[in-house]
Image (cartoon, rainbow, N blue to C red; front, side, top):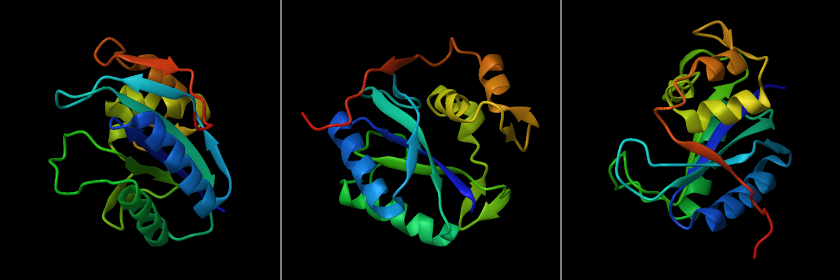
Length: 165
């Protein structure tokens, strides 16, 4: 069974929306292993800080089915697809990797390029899968995080309470 690795982020009512996304993902996939939640400044635009995490999911679904389910979760949580690419959002769920798939599939390039570009993706990924190889680079995620210029994107851990307040 392939492992699906996704990034999850929000900067609009982020605590509430991460809780709702987590519940929706559990309902769809039943077993999720989540990283620490990190807070980061918006990347690519001026806006409120984001809360981000990475999750691992074991699934027998196809990538096409996964994409439909993730998009539906984003939509239920109020994702406005009319907004510019770099803007605030209630929910952003991206497939980072799917098993050992590489190349373009279902309109996605795998592994996703953001893995090595954004601290809010790479750090939680390195936390969950430190010894796994990143296919394009041939390096472990932990090594990629060690080499990442951590001064260019501010990122810090958040003590996150998954229960609603």
